[in-house]
Length: 232
Ligand code: 5RP
Image (tube, rainbow, N blue to C red):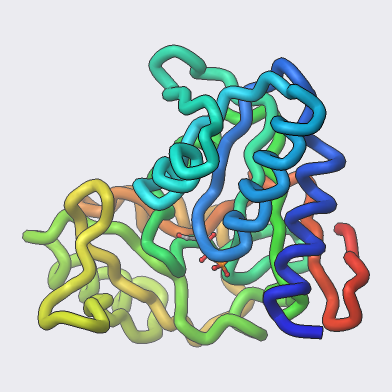
């Protein structure tokens, strides 16, 4: 069974467990969420569910529109019943690394407005300690003019290496939906207190958000290679 199938079974399970009629639903970002939106669209059609969808990125907004779902925003729906989102890594404490797709800021805002954050992922994201499986580091969204001082400060505080994320197809850095840059922090110490680390990094002027999601996620579904789903 392919990795894609593993993503699909996790996404379908989460949507079937958590999405009810008359709910406000946060739509995460990334390739696994595409399956969640597909499943939601099927259920809206067949069960006539009433669901307002709040996007976490430009990509999520496009998905909602493409599937003819009801698009909402935090201005009119500041309380979200459940958000279903992907993750780059989930440790045994349910601490997440997010932002592999560069959408961490809006993802965290939407998650912070949600009664529940449910993660959907394939089995490769399921780990004991952050850094066991995901090797690209923790994404940090920064104001462009400050990326060098931020990079130096984080390296001197916590060690490791920080790389400015570059666009694959064209020269120059990735620019987020919010007009910012991303630093990927490849850390060396896996035993850091991630809650503290995230708040210390956020105090550095010019840091907008970190891809560390600590104590935010209540449930995770990991699709397995053979098509089953492991819950945490
Ligand atoms: C985007 C994210 C994604 O949710 C994360 O990168 C997982 O993506 P995928 O489902 O494609 O593996 O945080 O910023």
